[in-house]
Length: 506
Image (cartoon, rainbow, N blue to C red; front, side, top):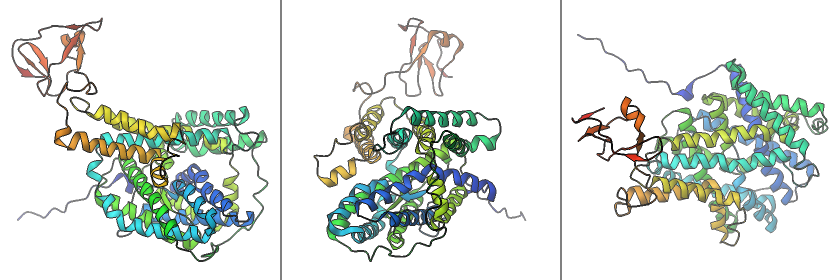
């Protein structure tokens, strides 16, 4: 009688636990990476709504608190909620323009919070639809989206490097850009370190070194650290009971569609970087965590939550795949929300320092997308035009932010996001060219179909650069599909060379 063998499930890369100390260190790196992005929306929306300066600090603390809770939910996960991936959550910048419009049209903060809560509920109800589109995200689509995420964040890094606030006299100064460049140099040097711990913490250490350098030359302002309370718990509904208006909820629902699209892209991107399986169920759980946190967020005076793309870049550049590192970052965010003095310390990090680090972070996201696109088969299909048109569409709102200003508000809200523009274009073109039979191109029927493969004459003699399935037919090389492989001489001219008389694979 044979003994029963119990199968052992393979451990996912994201499930590795690095220990409390390392997790907190890498988690702090995540917090510093996204801190500027998470505090900007409450400052902008609160100022537009006429919130007094002292209460703006409360609004920021609340957004840190709820962002930490949302991050813990997303990374740890509970039944039906949370992708269990290293995704950092925070206040979505995509909602800022719409929330400002709601706040300034007479509704104030109560209407803002009501619109966030109502639209998030609608978003929660439609998440099953988004979870079903995973099969329409092959590498040609995910590669485009990941690349566009990185490219769309580069203006953010440049703005940070220049100073972050174009109303300041020092904005774009040589000093600011030099500080950003110095931080970038430190990142590169530390990334090359032969000590793994230093290399992985290169972003955090570079931010610390950059901040110290800024302090020495008088470019860091620590004067506000002592102003305000040390401990403060977010008071529920501190700005009044939410007010639900049809116009506000509908306008924010359009934003929620954008956020769902971007979060889907971020989930797929981080899954690709981590090297783990991302299925329909996992996307659905991630989107429900997004919307569930967004429903609760207004209770604690917060806004719509979404995954932060810049932290996807941090996962790529550090190679730290553990989701518990992000959980530790979520805990830090919660503590920052409860201890405003720590938040003020982090806020004292000069924006150009974040800009220098952001150049590497965001560039790494784009590089990860390019690596995915390198896996795509471009032979005999329209994948080349899918990539070209989709990335082009994604870069339009980045290159010309006012491009869609004359379009209907709902249209502009969706396509003003380069990530959404690229994702929608890539999915539709992939459907048209690769799923609809009548739209498929025959080999050689379009100028956009990639050219035939060729190898050098010198490689023929040594059988170099041959691929799996290549074979010799009637003395000439053909690929696995029977298409001829051209041979070119040193001048790039096609030559007719016979390499054998018998058929066979190589």
